[in-house]
Length: 235
Ligand code: DX5
Ligand code: ZN
Image 1 (cartoon, rainbow, N blue to C red):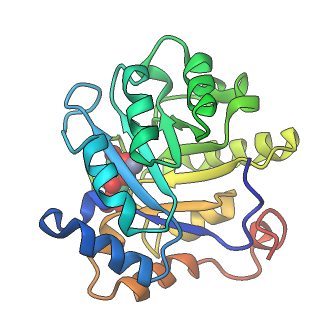
Image 2 (image 1 turned 180 degrees about the vertical axis):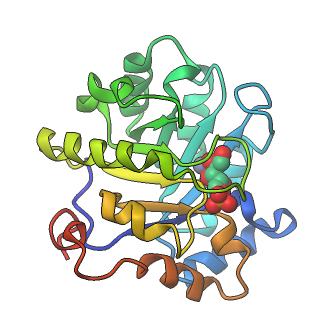
């Protein structure tokens, strides 16, 4: 479980970084005020793209204090979870479609001392997570189809985000509600209004000339009068 954040957490996605300078890119977003480092792991099988595995997570681990937020877009995921844990990932999130036993997968992640997350594709209903809330530290809503950065935000997911906010609040659990895909200062207000507590952004941070300004623009995009900022986010 996480303490309730007092302001939206911003997790830049390394997918949009300059891959020839990963160490410098990680340092730059940390200096710029990023809260978490989001790591998109793709296998060319679960999603139609390939990125990196535990070796890259391990290589970057000594160079940042930010929690490493691993988003596994691989199937099966279970055989690789220990490797990501050993590499230094702090949060390990999986898609329910990546294996037959989501409950067991979350148990495995927790047993390794890591925060466990469930990622919902645009077509995946919230039912996929309802019966495993006791093992869930993070729920991530995809607002694009997973596999690539720079895609257009799917506003069709907003009712799902709001429904998950209600589900989390009713459960009384400190579960982080993350949104991944197409987040910009223009789209962020709608997901914050719907109850998100962590925004993942690739292109909108790494594609900007000034990372600090980009992170601040996303974090502060919601008007302070938002009910979610005065209640769920405690600010
Ligand atoms: C997509 C990834 C996202 C991606 C987001 O499969 O999970 O984390 O990097 O990139 P943007 O912010 O460019 O949509
Ligand atoms: Zn991601």
